[in-house]
Amino acid sequence: VGSSMMGPNIPPNICTMDELRDDPVVKGAIQNLQAGFLGTDGAGFFRTACAMAYTETPWNRDDFNGFVFEKKQILDICKSSANNCVTLGGDLHDSWAWTMFEDAEIDGTPVAINLGAPGVTSPGWGPFLKPVFGSIASFIGDNEGVESLIQDGFYAANPGLVYGEMFHKGFFAVKATKETHTTEYFLFEEEVILSDYESARAMSESIT
Image (cartoon, rainbow, N blue to C red; front, side):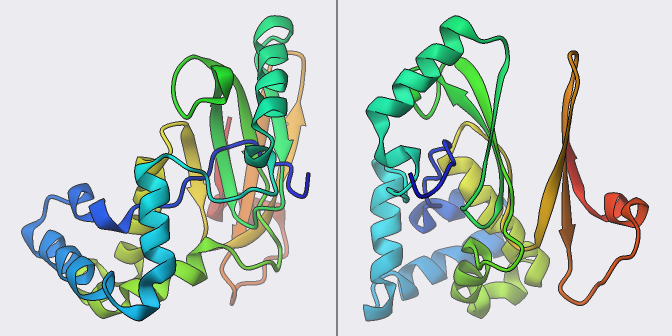
């Protein structure tokens, strides 16, 4: 298996992203993008991504989503023979945390969690998706608004996705005891170089 991630990672559905915002100006800008962009020759990938989101089809096939039978077997063991199973993975380039459900469904009865480490230099979804929203960025909150919309698109398409960050590189650190499992995600701006972990923790996300 090329990637050790188990989360479904269904791509965000640009066709329905206007439903994620209530502000009429923002909603209208997204609808204009949908009408003007998705029908163009350069939008073939994104039309495919919309179809995958509608059919709840994960994007990757070189991770456990390409080995559904084996994935179900592992999750069945997690359900029957493990207590609060935590799986660690990587090679999806971005930061992820999923609740994993019985029978490898995208929603349902939780049986495990899957934490995905970000890449250090590998490109991820963020730089690929952000340019699509460049023409409406000023209407939806500029850079912060674009990033928030993309992340919310992933959350909407993946009910088990608890955390997704695809705009910063970094790593995570795990501390496991008999009672707790804590994973800290250390994520950095490209132009920032930090020299101590205290500063890094203050700037990064954490999941406990």
